[in-house]
Length: 255
Image 1 (cartoon, rainbow, N blue to C red):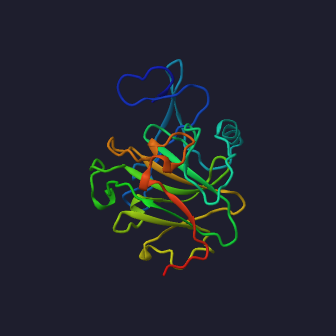
Image 2 (cartoon, helix red, strand yellow):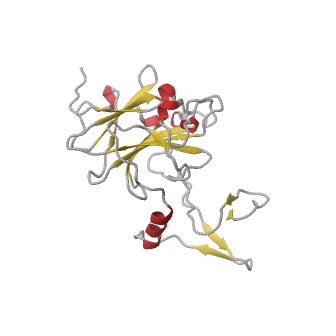
Image 3 (tube, rainbow, N blue to C red):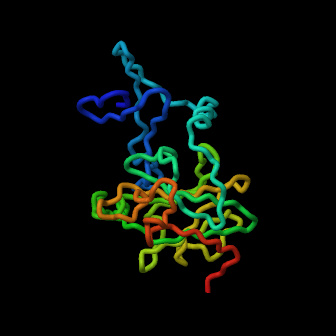
């Protein structure tokens, strides 16, 4: 149930301040390939009117551009006025209400400008997470429930280009990761999981790129998650070895 005012007794209720907004389910990583909804299908949506009648809303037959949605994003979406840095620095967004942050998820991001042949590396210590795809319980003790890194276009509504989540990122013996970011044409031949590197597609070269790292549901004892970073501050202020560091590795070849 989505409603304004107090929660309804029984069931689950999402509270809305009223006015216009969006509601959507957010699957993260399906245990079975090819089932992005986890095999559960899409939810049914019904509107309960003031007179008590209930009206089902049908699924859209086709997906088309909606100018009203674009207007909403341009009006209420967070600004895209942070200049690209060289090297890019991960920070927690100043407006923590943007990017669909919620009590369970928070984000740090870095803005990068493309140049011909440019290759970036994101590196750091990976928080522990339960590997449910390997049979671990979702409730298994871990520092986070989930983390991911995505490349996005730095324009509203931050179109997603590519993503990796925790179980897809190779780690070394210390639990550290190295994620290479480039266009497909500029992907180094050595940037493979066999060599200990993950890779994500840069995306559009006509607009700055926004790197986003998501942390979900940190354990109370994990004090170096993205949740501990003050809005507007750099990840390095509180995240220690877990702070992602971006390095320009254009032209680099491992020994």
